[in-house]
Amino acid sequence: MQPYSERRARLIERMGSGVAVIATAPERLRNRDTHYGYRHDSYFYYLTGFTEPEAVLVLVAGDTPRSILFCREKNEEREIWDGWRFGPDAAREKFGFDEAFTCAELDAKLPELIADQPALHYVIGEDPAWDGRMMAALNAVRAQARAGRFAPSGLFDIRQPLDDMRLIKDAHEQSLMRRAADISARAHRRAMRATRPGAMEYEIEAELIHEFRRSGSEAPAYGSIVAGGANACVLHYVSNDAPLRDGDLLLIDAGCELGGYASDVTRAWPVNGRFSTAQRDLYQLVLAAQDAAFAMVRPGAHFIDYHDAAVRVLAQGFVDLKMLAGSVDSVIEQGTYKRFYMHRTGHWLGMDVHDAGEYRARSGGQEWRTLETGMVLTVEPGCYVRPADDVPEAFWNIGIRIEDDVLVTADGCDIYTVNTPKTVADIEAVMAEART
Ligand code: GLY
Ligand code: MN
Ligand code: MN
Image 1 (cartoon, rainbow, N blue to C red):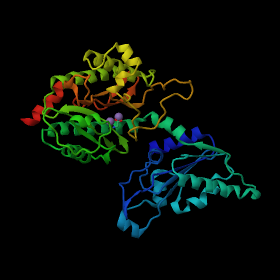
Image 2: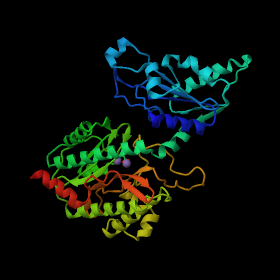
Image 3: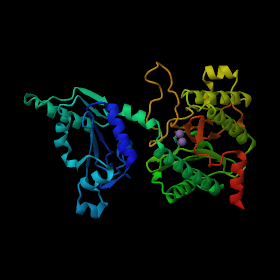
Image 4: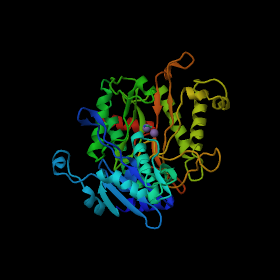
C-alpha cells in the first residue's frame, strides 16, 4: 500500500493546513434495481487504492497529520448478495489509514473534524449533493460559535494540488501503464488479424474486448471506436454496427484500463489487407506527422510544440496532395488545415483517458506547460476527408489517426505502445499472415 500512503503524505504536505474530504464515485442506477458497472473515482483511488463504493477519505494536515477512511460497514446479508466488504477495521489495517469509521458516521463526525481548522479542501462544484454536505458540515460548526468553535474560513479545490501530482507518474503508475499499453497492442494486432470484408464492426470490437479481458484488464478505458470507411471521419463514432467493405480502411481507437490506468491507441488499416495508393499516401503523411511530433516530446519542450510540429507536416502534405491550395504558411496561419485535421495532437494520459492536469502553466502568463520527465501523453495526429468537389475523389471518406502513448524521459520519450503494428509493411504483413 506504499504508493498510496506516500501520496497521502505528499498531499498533506502540499495542503499545509486544514482538512481535505475526498469521496469516491457514487453507484449509478441504470434502471430499476440494476446499476451501471462500478468505477471508483480516480482522485480517491489515487490516494487509497480502495475500490469499494460508498467511501470517503479525510486528510488532516498540520501538526498531527492523519488519514481517515469512512467506508461501508460489514453486513452479512449484503455480502451474500453483493460480495465481500472490508469494513472499517480490516480496511484501516490493510490500507494503512490512521483511523476508519463507517460511512454512516461521516456526517456526524465531519463537523468535529473540520472545527477550528483554517481550511476545508474538497472537489468543489462537481456534485451539488456533495457541495450541500460540505456546506452542512460548515454550518454545523458555525452553529457552535457560542461554544467557542470556529469554522474553516478557507475553501480550496483539492483538484489543483492533486492534478499536479497526478501529472507526473511514479514508478508504480509507469509500470501499470506500460502493461496496459502492451495489452492494447495485442488487442489491435488481434483485431487486424480478424478484419475481412463483410465482417461487422462489432465483431472486430469483440476481438478487442476478448484480448482486454483475457489479459486481466477490467474494461475498455473508453468507448471503443471501430469505424469502417466513412465512419472513420466521425471523430467520436461509437455505433460500431456497420459492415466492413472491401476497399475501405478501418479505424480503431481502443485501449484497455488496467489496474485503474488507461491506454489509448489508434490504428487504421485496410479491410482487405492491402492499402490502396490514395490510402497509403495519406497514411504515410499521418505517420510522418507523428514522427515529427515524437521529436518534440522531451523535457523542456512546451506542450503545444508537438502539435505544431504535426500540423506543419500535415499542412505540407495537404498542399502537396492538392487537397488545399496556397502556401504551407498560409494554410497554417488561416487554419484551413482544420478542414482535415480538427483536433489536437494529444492529451495527458493516466487513470483517466483525458487525464487530470492543466495544459497551461499557472505561473508564466499564456505559456503552455513545459513537459517534464514522468509525464505520460498521447501523440495522435490524423486526417479525415469528407467528400467535396475541391478535393481529389480518391481521398474521399478516408479517416486515419495514428495514436501512441508515450512517457516523457530524460532524453526524449519512450513509446509504450510500440508493439502495435504501425508501418504499412508491418500492417500488411500481419494481415497477410492471418489469411494464410
Ligand atoms: N480515445 C480518445 C482520444 O483519443 O482522445
Ligand atoms: Mn487520445
Ligand atoms: Mn484514442
